[in-house]
Length: 260
Ligand code: NAD
Image (cartoon, rainbow, N blue to C red; front, side):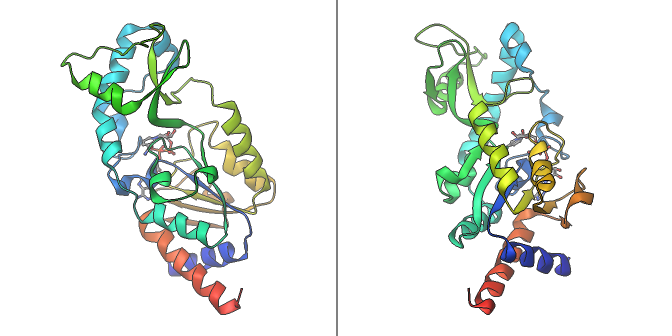
């Protein structure tokens, strides 16, 4: 592992535009379960597909039941050493942007510049009316949900349309502006740093591949194997909260030694 950490540090030290691509695995060390690991969210709740959310009152109930239970965990979560290491990379002038699949706002809470964070699966900080697009703070809707024992899917005060978290569910169109920007950044970076993502959720998982096809180097850090480990210059299987801070420390040493 030590050799891989040093190699990853060399690649980052040589790079000028690092794009970090983050998945649910970077937040497990903050106490937020991912989807697919043992104990992950799919063991407790089935996914609600967007089409079902639109057409079935039962599906909307299921969606809000999960959301009511999982939101407080996300609200209370604090950034962990992975998030803080990405703040360090930004301070060192290495970070072009973070493309995140996460909806938990932990990169913002850690202190990365908001303009460097592209949320391709939205955020659960807001709730949106699917009819008139009015948005509500998530906290306000949580109070409403918790005021009753039975789940009553919330409705828009303006137009009575169905409310949904400002996140992207399976089957829901991706946010165009964010995806276009993420694709552009992936295709113009010189190093793609993939952290805590199973790389099986599409279209998000195309982004590291676009970077690779455009000639960027690639580092993958994930607890388990991913389908793209063979494409990476360095693939490390371990916890990002343990591995990334060590890599960033080594990058600092290389930069100091080179007098840059
Ligand atoms: P995923 O659940 O498919 O994969 C997470 C990966 O992270 C797994 O391969 C797992 O082995 C690995 N992992 C878990 N803990 C780790 C750690 N400490 N260090 C390194 N690796 C670790 O998640 P995904 O690839 O992000 O894709 C699924 C969807 O999950 C995304 O669309 C995202 O929106 C959603 N999601 C987000 C959150 C969040 O915002 N925190 C939580 C759950 C799911």
